[in-house]
Image (cartoon, one colour):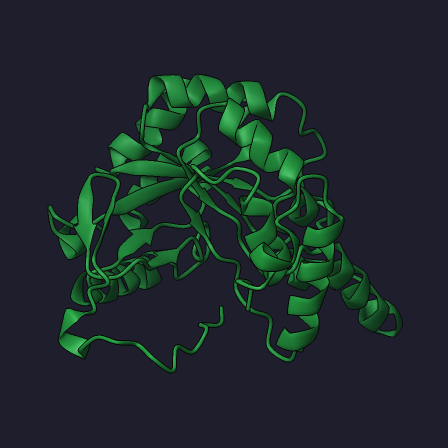
Length: 270
């Protein structure tokens, strides 16, 4: 992400406070180390090290996908990092949307309880799954399943994207299902998996196609305007992208959108 420089801050550094409330606990900064280690051979080692780093920095931590625990509960220790985070740290479990529609809400909630988590992330990764030969292919019923999970775990569900961004329509559906926390995601795993198993000659073109699929940083900021009551994380800024061009594109979309912010609102975008 990029921060907009303020040449006239009109305050002392000591007056700047980054602490926020998140899942009923206080973080020293609005940051989260999130979802990188599900099912990997070194998942336990990485989860425990990352959780310790999160505790030291005073930020939240979310484990990688707990899908592996559905068939192999003996790996639970790889995800059990409450000791590293301490009682005051924010810890979130993680499961995919594909599993959400296959299991009852109680089973999903139990994944969070098993590791003493404060809540659970549900990752939306249709593009990621489609890029994998062994990935899931059915995604119908996710919205209803999310609504049922929110009812079972009120205030304890975060929905995240894994690399393709979230459209205004998706944000509206999430808001309607009662989701209170959302991570709009940024460049992510599907950009890597689109090249997996493809002939080298096609890899470059496939990467470009995946890149076009992704909703960019400015799009994510703009899209959240359709659901302003949802706490949202700004998408990661892709290395090498021209931020000025991205900003101009977002401003053009705002001007064209029905009920858009117009020139004044667009000027607030970086």
